[in-house]
Image (cartoon, rainbow, N blue to C red; front, side, top):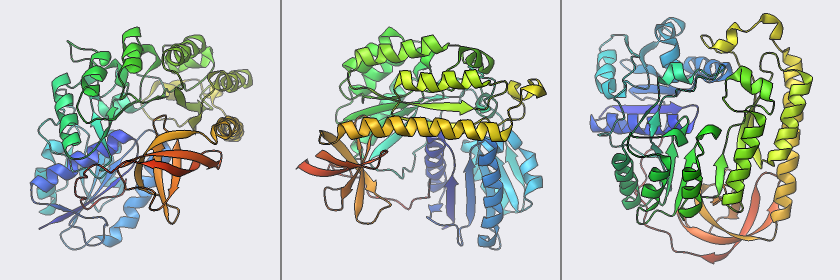
Length: 448
């Protein structure tokens, strides 16, 4: 049987898309393998959110060429494929397949054509495509990534996503619930609902509050998460559902991007510093112990020293426990690239700001985590840790806890006491164990 290897870059939506592609190809006779050496089909499922991610993929395509054999196929899928299209065939002559996020239904046929020597490309948008009949081949058997929404309508001035994933469209509530029910029967007790602005989800009859309540009612589901929401779509109904549905975890990843209202306006984020912080306050008032993490960009065109200081002060005011922090990366075709050239922030200035921001976030995280030492909390054991003889587990509020090997089985829930911290992660000791739930048999996995 022919084999397929997929390497995944980028966000959780790309991880979910890789699971869909593996499932589709498996249904057509392909066997997933966990390495590229000798694979009949090698695919890179890509991200286009920053230039660094694209350059990394270009470099990796060159590295993977040595694993190709006579008749094998190299392809690029995902957001970078959608953005660059035929340019990828010119940049890498050994690439013969370019497939955008809405074209995975055609993947087996496109692969077959590529294996006969044709250079195949498909990057058209399909506003009806949700891959409802696909059977994902999941490589995480503890939690399930559940896409509920594709595309985005917000069109922030820096963001390439509306151009690579198209306009926003949502799945039907019943279809989402059915998929979650299936994952629970397969042994997974945590679901993560995915969307570009996930809390704007609506199927025309129901809103995101309805979706949380319906999914949260699935028997056997113990933890429910979602990512990434938009501050403007946290209605009172959604916040009430979060507070009242027992399985909804006490963590929100809420992208802020900047703490300056002037900057947010240039970014077209559609909220101000004040309304963002007010949203955080409403969430915390409704959900005691809520952990809030975020995304922040520095060096966006026109960012002044004063505006950057506003970001630092907003980070402190929001009391984030962690943040993904980035230097602005211009993306061709987005409005930010058309801003006045004199607004460009020198790289050394952006780098210095990023360094200060990272230090601020890490200092806050360390202070918060030190205050948690000695507490007992529930964790879900997710996988073996990179550190030898350790397991990696996660609290309901998304803290990472490293446990000694043998503390519990992967997929089990433990009560642990937090007894150490590096400032970002914890070490813990199990004080109470629960028997692991039945797990689905592991499949050959591609790295994500």
